[in-house]
Amino acid sequence: MATKPKEGPAGVSNPTKVFWPEEGYTKLDLANFYQDVFDLLEPYVEDRILTLERCPDGLEGQCFYQKEKPESMPKGTPTKRITNATGKRQATNYVIGGYLETQLALVNLGCIPVHITGSRAKTFPKPDWVCFDLDPGSGKFRDAAEAGLLVKEVLDKLNLNSFPKTSGSRGLHVFVPIRVGPTADEVLKFAERVVAKLASEHPKVLTTEHSIAARGKRVYLDPFRNGSVQTVVSPYSVRRKPHAPVSTPLAWSEVKTSLDPAEFNIGNFKNRRKRTNPWERFFTSRENLKAAEKELQRL
Image (tube, rainbow, N blue to C red; front, side, top):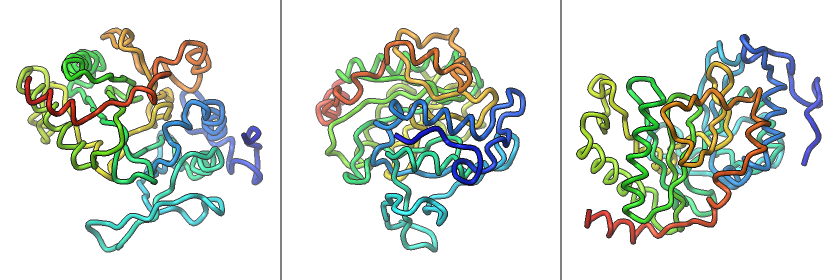
């Protein structure tokens, strides 16, 4: 593993550039955070297809998304060439994660969050998890927490082990690790059926409405993170939000209305590391999605 990034051209360019003005967190602080947690981050980004969200001026600047590998990335940076279904460009050369050098190079380009696909490059487009993205229309995490428990309830009935994490913003993400086999389209259709069932059973608090106006204050159950090149922020990803929050894996016992996701941030995350990893068994808990689909039909 690399040594700490150094100030200056040999390491992070503009290392003292402030990315979070209120706390004074700098670009170098962000690079050091990712280096410190890379042993935790690596299993989730290894061989994953990345979409870059570049925010060169930090919290208060403008951001833009980039899918094509930047020319300034280190020589030998792994890529995955994927044919585009639409657009002028016939194919895109996506950056592949899994190396600390790659992660630090992305920070150098102003990438604060880490956006990953559900498929690894070698098995694309066959994901190894299902992701449910819970976005509260109220803007209150407490509503996402309540919705998350409803999601867990139906997943338990389907005999699926599930793993929650803060989105790093106001929402909650629920992951189900699965055996590689179904395509992204099949995984997406399964997720759509699950959220449709939940929304129909709890119409006052949950919705699958695409229109933000039509959602009101209900929690939007988003299944579309499961598309083949759609992404979700990785566990241990920093978010471009006030206080530099970290998308943090949780135990279900921690999913409470009183939880404040901003409590987990780059300034204090060392304290979180001292606790038992609630996702320790994530990669040994792979589920059979076909069996769950049959069970879903019976509910």
